Length: 327
Image (cartoon, rainbow, N blue to C red):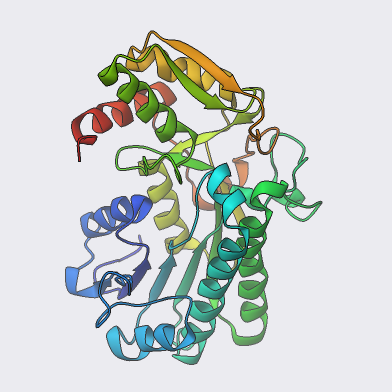
């Protein structure tokens, strides 16, 4: 059994969607609050915050703010849906590449390998090639170029895998590398400019109901397929990887359940009770044609598999948004 009680942990992005759930679970496992550090974004706190794209701020994180960390869980990212990726390819590449590069290097220079500590990098399913055979197997991660609309983001995240493997070989740094499929659940990002498909459609349906609209608009043709993972299950997978992994073998986190966007939207419409028309805008991109993961490696190496059923997770997410959308 892994003893979390005395571990000193940094969780970047710990106040975000996945991070909030993960930190709660760490406390439940016995992590002391004084031993868990969540860096605050510098834009929110110029005096005590951190811009993790900057080397000096990452050095300050390990050297002054929270020295002697045993585990770094890197969740922080600049990310969004198809529209956000299309509008910010340069920023998404730079920010995600810079964060990983500085955090990994500064962890090394501040003694993480010598303490036997672990760096856990959460990657992205966007790193897979555009036409990866379905279900996606980790062995195919390098067999082609990612889907163009999110390639800068996906490649930046994938480069962190190469860096961690190099640091394992040269410096003995222990690490883990995870490839979660699209996450969803209570507390998700419902901003229509940056959100992914599930929160976007939930918001559109509920707001249309509130206004009495007779239709909603949906991007694409609906022919692309996706797989989705409930945020609670994802947090369990990340924690398990921190407990058992020593090297950055890429590991998919998903459910192995594929659904077309058309079927997904119709399911959300049914669960929200929206009765209006769906107007598909085929001029907007569909993104990667298919996504469905082979999750056998996660079961083998982590003894992990998703527990929450898809409709159950959607109902919980819809209920949460109904309670909070006025905020």
